[in-house]
Length: 87
Image: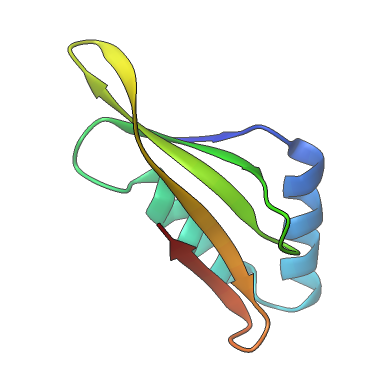
């Protein structure tokens, strides 16, 4: 599950992806984070200081409670014209 904490940033990144015909690359990485493991997880997305990028916090549900698991970034790489997940 993805929880986007800044819809304005999300709209800007999606518009950038659409303008550059790389929406499928963005969606592939967002889907990857949304379904990261077979465990019950949720991914919180926040704006990152890198252009067209996010930082994220991953949580896992254990014993009915959400707990911090790890964090990282969904970073746009100009040279690759796509996003990479960094932890």
